[in-house]
Length: 93
Image (cartoon, helix red, strand yellow):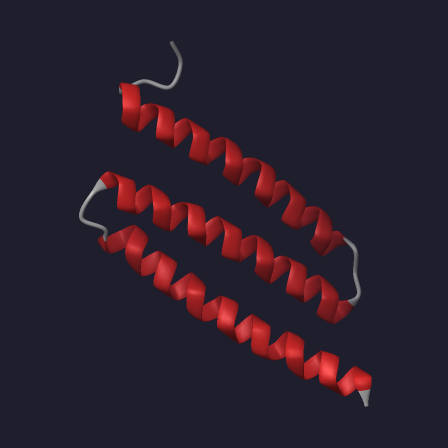
């Protein structure tokens, strides 16, 4: 019984995260300002990381957890670089 509940819960969570990814992609592509686009990209990489985590829970394979960690690290660095670029106009001083 609990295995079936976990399976359905993960499936519903994956569908909700997929909907969030679609909305973040729309914000990233359609955002009127550059800050909105960066925020959409930030949300998109976080939801992609969550999707990998949920897929790892569903399959029971640990490689997806490592992929989520790599996405989190690269996404953080990209967000910092984009924020610095928007504030100063250059990334490397």
